[in-house]
Figure 1 (cartoon, helix red, strand yellow):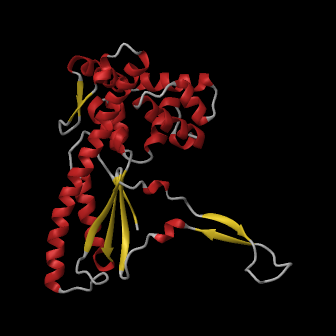
Figure 2 (cartoon, helix red, strand yellow):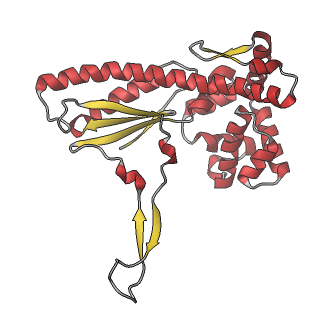
Figure 3 (cartoon, one colour):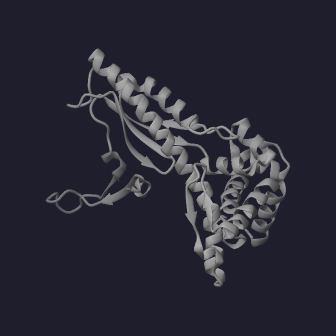
Amino acid sequence: NPDLQTVPHPVTLRLPGAPGSGPGVSEADTEVNMRAAFVARSGCVLLSADYSQIEIRIMAHFSRDPALVDILTQGGDVFRRVSAQLNKKSEAQVTAQERALAKRVCYGVMYGQGKRATASELDVELEVAEDCIAQFRAAYPGVNKFLNDAVVNCRVSGYVETLYERRRYLPAIYSRNPKEKAHAERQAINTICQGSAADLIKKAMIDIHKELCALEAQHRQHQRPTCGSEYWAARMILQIHDELLFEVHSGYLDAVQQIVRRCMESAIHLRVPTPIKFRV
């Protein structure tokens, strides 16, 4: 399961002159892009489909918080909307720092991150981070109840369940060691959200595979141009967290995008939409 997010972005290196060029040759700036090593075959393109804020959307689904559900249903810049609501100002008045803080608080609250870690990550005063966390919990009481209920229910049953009722047992929830117990409590919430996100994308992958097989049969029937020496219109080549990567024949790009969008956005029906973003 390679983590391609660790592949470095392009960097510029200052390299010496060519060997044998003699003294006085100036250094030259050279861009090194490791990501350029990943390319599609001739006649094909790489298509990336990525869920937008999927774990926040799953949290909204489970918590049923009306304010958060409303924000995610309206669309637009989700974290700008959250920041505008928390700061009681229009979206146009929200600064980049306020948006970043709202985003960090959303994920921090969901995963049990404390005020000190939040303040450190965003380089703000401890009081600012503390106030933002308190404001978020007050603005979205359904989220607060969901987080508390997840821990309480785990203490009762010893496990948590995802959307598709996959169970994860957390024996440390009964530990007398405060650190171990706190870690298990965070795992309880993380598993529900991240595990359900895994349910969602795995279901989408199954649905996409079925439709791509049907497209492939049509492709073969009409004997369209192929990618390289193999005979296919599109194939799913990688899953990276909440993102899917496809290699697609250029002539089938529109058709494949329609298939991927339909399957990913309707894989599991939540109380909020599950939009995706494409990159080609």
